[in-house]
Each structure stands twice: as C-alpha cells, then as structure tokens.
Image (tube, rainbow over all chains, first blue to last red; front, side):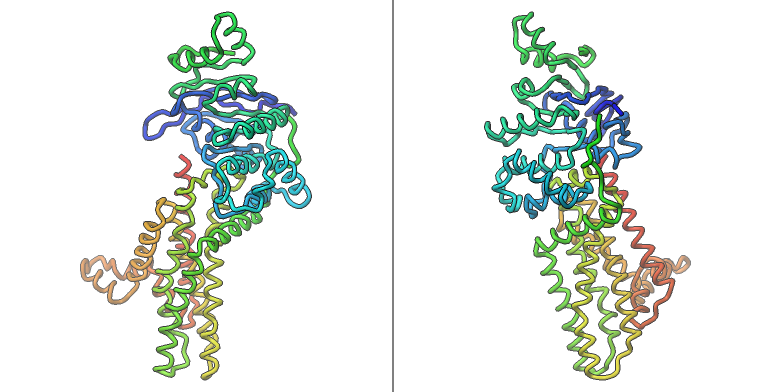
Length: 251
Length: 255
C-alpha cells in the first residue's frame, strides 16, 4: 500500500489568541527530505509538534503515513520519530536505558531491540556514552542520544527540530550521512536555520513566515532559478522569507 | 510506503508497567523517596511506640488513626514531582510523542508512587511484631487499618498527581497538595465540621462536607476494623475523580 508520508491540511494553531500557524497545507512524500525554514516564531516548531502529536492544533487535518493523527493518535505515533527542539531526555537515566525504554514502549524487545540499538550506536557513534547517565553527556552526545531514541523503531516519518544544534562539524557530517542513508524509504521533515544543511541533504524546501507557507520549492528548481537570476539559493530563500504570506510560490 | 516490522507499541498494561517502572527509578534516583520513607516511618512509628509503652494497650488503632495526617504531609513529597518535573525539564513532550495514551501515563505515574507507599506500609509491619509480642492482637482491625491506609495513600497520591500537573514548581506542588489534603482531612474532624455547621446552621454544610468529601471518617472506621462499602466507595471514587482531573490537566497541557 502506498500513501503520502505527511499530509497537512489547513493547520491552524494560536497561543493566547496570537496565531502561530494559520491555514498551513503541504505534503511530504516517501523518499523526500524536506527542509523547514523560517525565522524564529514563524511556526516551524508548532507545526512539527502538531504532526508529532505532542500538541493538539486548533484546526486542520494531519495524516502521518496514511493515519489521521486526530482519529488514531497512537497508531500515528508508532509511525513517527520525533526529535524535539530540546532533547527531552531524562537526565538520570543512562543512554542505554533511554534507548531501551523507547524501544520497549514501541514494542521492541530481545534480539530485535539489541540489533537495532547496535546499528544506531554504530551509526551515531554512541559507544563511549552508552553506560553514562544523560546528565554526564555533552550537548552533542545528548543530541545524538535523542536522535537515536527518535529512530529506534525505524519510523516511516521522521520529524527533526534543529537536529544539528550542538553538533560539531564532524558530527554534523555524520548526521547528514545517516539522514541520506535512511531517507529513501522515509518522509523526513526537518527544521533548521542553517541553509547549507538544507542544500547538503534536502530535496525540497518549505519556508514559513508568520505561520504561513511562503515558499514550497524543489531545491533543483531553486538552483536553476538562482543560476538564471545570477544569485544564490540563499538569496532566494531570504527573499521568500521576507515575502508577504499571500504571495506563495508553489513547487 | 512500506511498514517497518519495528513499528508497533507495547500492550496496554505493559505500557502502564513501563511508565511506572521508569517513574519509580526516577523517584529513587532523586533521593527524595528514601528521605520521605525514613521521615514517614519515624513520624508514624515513634509516637505510636512511645504511646504503647506508656499505656501498655495492645491495640494498633492509635497508629492507624494518626496515619492520615502523617501521610498527608509525606506523600505530597512523592507526588510533587510526578508531572511538574516533566514540565520543568521539558520531557512532557517526550511522553506525548510516544505511543502511550494519556490514561496509561496517568495510571503509570500514579502506580509508581503507590508502589512506594506499599513499600512504606510493609516497613511499618514491625509495629505488629511489637504488639504481637506483648499480647493478643485483633488481626481484623489491623487488616482494616492497612486496607484503609492503602486506599488513603491512593487518594492522597491521586490528589497530589493532579496538583503536580498544574504547576512546574515542585515546592508549589508539595505545599498545595499537603495543604489541600490536610484541609480535606480536617473537614472530617468533629471540631471542624461543627464550627462550619455553626456558620450556616440551616444548610449544615459542615456535616455534609464531612460525610461526602472528607476521607477522615472513612479512615477512622477502617482503623477500627470496619471495612464499609460506603468508605471504600468514597475513597476509590475520589481517587478516580482526581485521576480524571489529572487526565484533563494533561490534555490541557498539550493545547
């Protein structure tokens, strides 16, 4: 059975009457890595939280791997891996205990869990901190432990909120390699402020401004456009981010 | 899109168990639990033993009659961190991203605290050996006392868990939980409800509150070995109410 990885339709959410996301609609297909850009407060985290199911939006419909998040939130969460903006790790647990807990809640145990943990440990280079408590780990390791926890169940949909925040350049490269390795059978949506990151791994870019989508374009098209206009992709994205919400550019 | 064989979730009760296990480990990790257990044991056993050697009466009733007040102060220290810590450390979002229902989370956290309360009750059993060594013991009274203490513990922890879900500050959660529990217990005291009755004699609010809201009279009947259905219904019903309020509060936190 095939279906869209992420489908967001008419998403709205306000905080104390101030709209954070206002009528947002977009889709992310399997195999796509979509960069989610926008200034602080543009609505990126609110959107990711609504898709992950950690926030109940005021209005709108969200489907994750074909499952409606409002109708069957638990089934939707089994298909989603979410790395929050803040690690969301329990400080007192060891890295290994955190990963085992996430796996167990997702129904993984025994050899399947061990195999998966071994794979993630190797890819994210977590070996040195597996036995350490989270509070004793550096920011970079904490980020990687949280990423491993988000990927422990090999989710179909991966949501990453500023995943490389706190990673050094080598770790960032390792993260990109991992993302490219897992992406072919997943829909990946990640928010970032770093455009080079988007250019390095993304196939498509979404730009939010004041809760509205102001740019939805494939990176290859943006490169062609930048070449034609003798500017950079960054110039195009920055121009889009400053654009009024009514002037949306479709892919 | 293909579905990975790794994508699933633990069964409903295993989910509750996993939440309870994680929370128990976290509580023990904080040292607050051990300190609370020691304080609760000393505060409940020492006065009883002192009174026992003065009076020489082989009767556990005074122990169980004093217990609600001690537990109101001590169990608030166990429940204060249940949710407020998650809000403060931003781990609430982690819980909500896992395939666990709000009811599983609320029950798991409550059961983890209740388990520590059971440990406390087990650690008070030397009191029974002391009594048994000095004369015949009325085991039905003791059984009633323990049933009442277990139910009261569940009631206090449900109340405390709900309060904890309304604030990010553990100290505030402790103070509010302890004060509310003490106030609700005090409403069942004859000296308090007769005063409240005196304010509005035609309404008889004090006696109504004592009978329908305060768990004190239920605990007193348990301490005397009387396990009445109305007392069980009052404690279990209010525990369910506080757990439901906790659920509502948890849902409100995700908006």
